[in-house]
Length: 569
Image 1: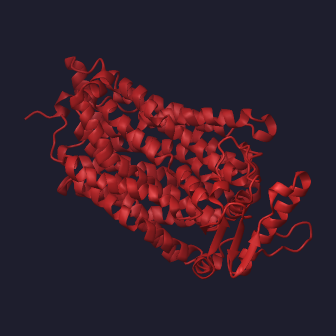
Image 2 (image 1 turned 180 degrees about the vertical axis):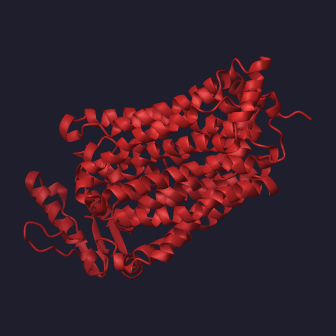
Image 3 (image 1 turned 90 degrees about the vertical axis):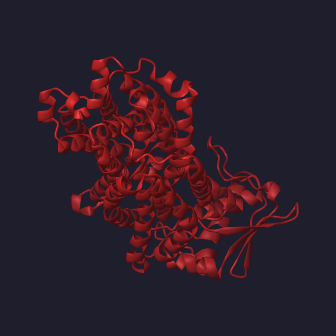
């Protein structure tokens, strides 16, 4: 019986070995993920360089939203490049996406900061992030489709799992380079890295772009697409066929709600949100957090291949949905255990000296201001919550009657906020500053001793003590979280390829994938931290991935088909 390989000309057979196909496809995609996630690792520095003038909490969330802007446009990239891939070809399209991504990232390293050009700096940053998102929207579907259409039917999960590794490998590569550059060993060091050294990882993308292009230019077209093109059976209207006909649109919706949505939130919680949680909430220094995460990633990454291989044996559906179910059941316990391991002093203080905010709820805002104009100083509740948000302290809200001046109770002591209605101008600023120092303390400066705040007096540490971090346990918990990622992500490329017909495969699989991973997943860090800022509970943001993962599991059980024995020829 003829196979798709028989459709290839003889010179294609001679040059198209499996190693070249997988290496060129996956390594190029690794470089694209490196480019895309580099921003996520440098969020705090980006906030300082490009979002000067905003209050600290808003600046961090706004920096996450700039990060998310690349995710927001990913579905549009999927539409544009998906259609080109189904009309012109897989190879041509993912060469273009690599070029757009590499140039955009290189240019971020050349951008002037807010201090130099003002508001033009964040505008240019957002534009380049959007070009990155457009490129990534076309890259993934092209690479996954290209590899799958070369793979034997009984090894499609294993072959495409190399593409699934690329997102985590790109993140690990970015982590490793950031660690090396900011290390004193390289002669840069932390201070210089925050000043100008953060540009180096971006500028290196120019080198990676040349390597990726060199590899991909060696490739020929996918045999499945080449056969369709030779026969004249490729789609002329892939967007209309994919989303304008109910038979295919129904499969798109099933794929999204029954698999992709849960996969997306598990991926971004287990890797990116975990990293932010370590640094922002548990106050682990950036270098230590990055190092622990890269160890966990290195240990867990082979399981992408394992679960891809396993899905060729027992099916894709049960592995993906099992990962969603485990994530929804274990997310809260896992991150509470992470607190115990990474910052035991903080966990002890939360248990033995809980913080409560007594305030009239009508006076309390969400602590998130997208335009950056709110200083959170018009009500006593906002003053209290802003002080605690800056200190990243977990607290409980206690409702107080109207007219009550908001206060913090901790360790048997009550700290009453200044009443902004009775103050104005410099007097109000001074009173708020004094209150914040009383609550959270102040680091030593200009030869003056540090002021110990009430939080620190009852055990809340200003930062995690490196000597007290249980590093093996932190790595074990992070490994478990990434293991869940490998379960939901390892088999999903093969499943998406198998769900859709060849003539509209690139378009059909790309859009739901990037809506899920670009919007549900990409916005997760910003939404999660906004939820924490509004509620006060550092674990409150996990309700988002838990609910989405649980819903995907339930929906997938009833509507998601098993695909692993399907032929895609």
